[in-house]
Image (cartoon, rainbow, N blue to C red; front, side):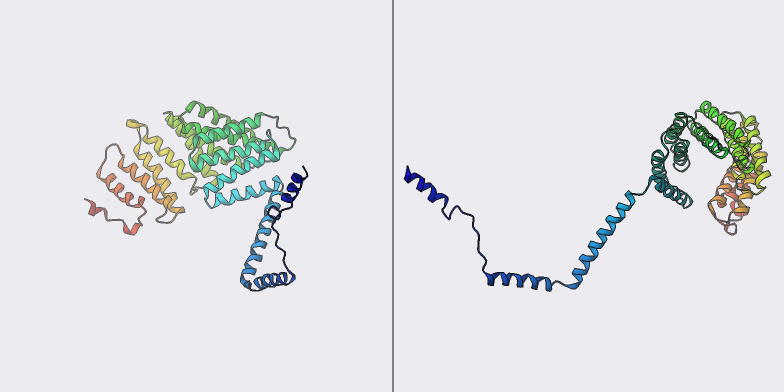
Length: 353
């Protein structure tokens, strides 16, 4: 028994089972320290500078991200709105829509679900999708979100200016819905939406804080849209009435050479052409000539806008019911202009026949 215990004790104390630790003598430790100091000393100065610069950059980046995370949502919303205005001005459509999406999320955080400013953010996003991208479904979806936000809570305020802003949001919602439904050929829904927008616009125009210029601008937009809607429904007399009202308001408040007249004159010309055998082609051409003359007064030769009006005018001459030689000559004159050619490079019409 004693022999066994001694054997066990001998085995546990055996140097084979003990951890291997090398003892470093004093002279060896000095040599190691000297070697490490030499390696630090031999490191190039440029590498040290690069490392220090990288460390500073990481610290700066970290501090910058920390400061952004602590920025209040209200300030982030202000920055976002400034970016939206900048991107729209520079026609950076995708970036503008990206910021509009961010603005909607921040508006929900800052104002809450039932606030009219959240509805405003939704309708701005809807208008951007429709105007810049022609995404009709997205426009309808976000307009519905805006309307739900307005209906989810009672908008109580004593301020006349805020009341005018609330009505402005409602008007924009129904105006955008009217345009989107028209694009989907849902003419009945479009008519209802535009009628609501017109009613809200009239109510808003009676408020003292709303300028007559702003009210007139909305009247022109709504009258033009109603004219297009009735043209799509083949109600040509009603359509012409709305478009002529829009023209009269534009001339009265903006002048005879306002570029806002160009699409309205063209719409009126298209309405006249759409009457088929009852169409008055001379009147249609007169409308297209008016649009082209205004474009010539406002845009330079070779511009896209001038080329577009020239193309519409050339098509009008070529679509005359009983095509005569004079109409063909004039059409051949305006078609090269529609391709962006200057007047000096237009071929003589005598060489075309």
